[in-house]
Amino acid sequence: MRENDAPTPTESPSPFAFRALLREQRVWDTGDAGLPPFDPAQAPGDPLTLFHLWFAGAAAAGQPEPHTMTLATAGADGLPDARTVMLHDADDRGWHFATHTTSRKGSQLAARPYAALAFYWHAQARAVRVRGPVHPAPPAETSADLHARPTGALAAAIAGRQSEVLGSIEELRSTYESAWRRAERDPAAQAPTWAGHVVVPDEVEFFQGDAHRQHVRLRYVRDAADAADPGAVWRRELLWP
Ligand SMILES: Cc1cc2nc3c(=O)[nH]c(=O)nc-3n(C[C@H](O)[C@H](O)[C@H](O)COP(=O)(O)O)c2cc1C
Image (cartoon, protein in one colour):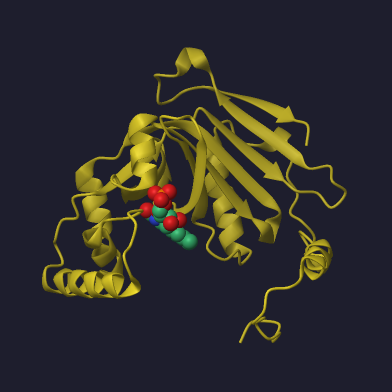
């Protein structure tokens, strides 16, 4: 049963009911708890430190799945695309995720190794955006990470074929069952198409929602002169909401 005990709808609402439902939705309905304060003048000099702080804050505030994010890419045609992926790490190198090189996003990243990430943590009315070039993660690191995850993760990675057209649900079941058996039999099995990627930040923006719509936006921009320097200096600027 869902938290509010409301029955799950079994029929689509009419367009009228849908629009009414849409209008009655609210954001940042945190009641007495209020929204967390954010003073950009006190923000750290680098975005990674602030990201770690906000991530820990989102987890502590009960934000479900704060490690999920929207990954936006563009292919050779320049058209945008987006989907949800999991954050595997955020460190001095950048923001890490893993996927199949043969998937749609894999082909897009091969054609244009550049991406944007978006996190939305409604429990604290916070959002974070990251943009930059995408570099391959060291394969040994990706493999170690995959093999430290539950059997299902390895089975899905072995099965591959992500984003190919699927003939039937039965085909999916039988492929995954045999991939699962293989993952159990050989927990060190390699998944050739599974690859780690690192978004190296050129820009990172932090958005703190405000009940009176005076949202605070703080953008960190990597100083072009220091682009090749991992200890780069960041320029900070406020943005109109
Ligand atoms: C919560 C959540 C987490 C996901 N995590 C990943 C992930 O870490 N890697 C991945 O390849 N796909 C992940 N997916 C699936 C993607 O959203 C997407 O369906 C898949 O990667 C195919 O995308 P593409 O066709 O654009 O390549 C996740 C989906 C959800 C809903």
